[in-house]
Image (cartoon, rainbow, N blue to C red; front, top):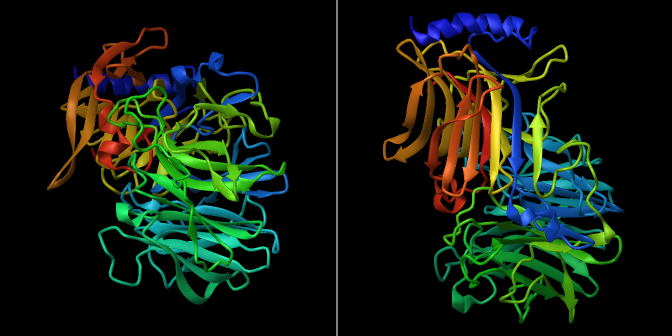
Length: 576
């Protein structure tokens, strides 16, 4: 008798009469009873912290391209999540240390999304700003691969946010609003100059007045800055401009060098008139890790995209992106994380670090704050340092720390108070650059393990379900259960791309264990010499190694030129 046919019959019994007696998994579905993630980076040993110190980054994992604003004693950040759904995480804090995700700005596919975004497209860096004159919050950004530049507003940052309105008449990326003390508002962005450029990837910062009442741009568009700080060094990809006003000056911050390279840097400029001319800070850049030794201890690379906020105690703080590589070649999988530093003002110029100084891995907590004790990881706050997070999906909605690909998957929380979540076997696979049955959780540590209990019996050779490690459409691992010629198989496979497209390559497969009756426990661990994929058929068993020394660097953002970090997720497809 073929193994899968036996499992189908046995699974029907266990799924209706076992520990989950009210849970029924129909053909075409996979049921995940739980998910557990444990992170254990040596950097985050609590013994490393002194009194009053916190870890840097302040947000681990792919909370990338953070921007920040303040209303009273409340601080709000947004981060970018590219082709993932829902769109644009919105976070809140009262102390700049403990951050809670309060919503997604764009929670429905009607807001922005389409089903054919590539993984490197979608919601590029966004900016959140508060207009005290109108008591209104705004988010601006660019949907690459979609409608272009957009703006949305909300009275309450927890939502609802308005359906985005498209902004026309300019190109580039990274639009950002600035509300002046005199009541006027301006939109700045990165774009191509309106003249022949001296070299490739020479960019400019543009500015135009913005009317909040009509949500439209008015007046002439002008260039505030072209090229970057030192044109003789041929800087490229001037980007992520932000405007501020302090005292007699307007301050412009802009990054250059490309957000995926260790040559990334942020420079400061100032003027007494918003239209310029802008003076270059003699000690630029105000933040960079370029030219520091590769492989240094607790290295932070790819630093840039600085955004500043004046705290309610009068000090200024900056958030910025950075990466924590695990090789001297700048390999990193978690994505670009959110770091913070206090801003130093000297001679009416802001800076974070002098050239040659390293981003600190710990810092004095702003505002005298301390880490707040949560009942469990993600119970309210995004956790810091090392932690274990177990998700039983026992609430009435998918938790905010989970994301889908492109558009909502048909996931459903198991009703009647039972734990677990059901994923339909979607028509598209995870490599298809289409909507897929994937529910992902950010990898937040270099050293981690993730596991799930899955109930699933494939019916055809096209069906597959299990764990997936997703970096991009053409860079992902899939570990789970498939079907061939009457046998249920454990399969580990990965995505490969060539001139003909993206396809899967099997790393290993074998028949399921003899005691497999529709339930399997799957686990992935990151160890020094690679990923280890393991399984067991019963909760009382020890895990059996299925494949070890699986290449970690395959999921490195720097090798793929990917923008968003690895997500470890639950996956189900009927198009394998």
